[in-house]
Image (cartoon, rainbow, N blue to C red):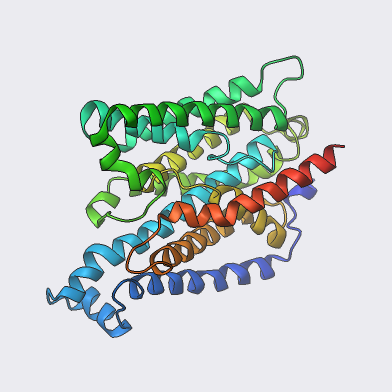
Length: 337
């Protein structure tokens, strides 16, 4: 007999239509990200730069600066949103997200250490840092007689975030060169990347996003509770391991490319659930679209708000996400009373 959890709370036609509408909205954000900046560019010039490149200044700006940055916003936004959705499903904790639980900060610390020691970082260091942070938070949150609870998980994540942030600051104090190299990146930035720097990380993000879609049904069952999921025949241990690997791939890739951008993985899954329900087979693709849209809009605002200078996009997402986190924390506290 089919589980009620696998029956969408919204009509599949309605949900499919929403995805169909979201794709052109994301494409529009991608286009505006290319058009808008310190020097506005018209759509005809964009078309010419992409398909009839002539080496002019505008064409070079589009190909080497605007296009990579627009693609990066979509990739990182999708990765962070899906990682957040999976984290919340795994922990059954509405306050869980890779940045809240210290996973992003762990990846950032590993990148800073790599730059401090070797002079350059790589995505493999970000993966290692994210994985170590995730295992540490899970272990700390599971200590005690009551085992893992949502509140203990958030407390463990907050404590680890403060610790790793302090270690990162200490390294930067010791090395002025390292600070100058990554100061803007540490605030969460999409600037300074080209297509060549995106390509090595793209396979990891593609594998992570594809793997998340494969796990949609299993995550929906797991969100019901481990006992219920096991009663329905789910191998929960393997699902948790696979989902954790996906989170590490997505969070590590996002941090390696754009720094520890916060709150995208917290906000987007909640907004998506409000519209599509609790079925992860729909939550995950919607999160991909919504994450890309949110970070693209945030990046456009970061470039335009104090022209000709720009803000790190991490500041813009924090302005959106911090009040949302306070609201969720208050709601969770009230529901537990």
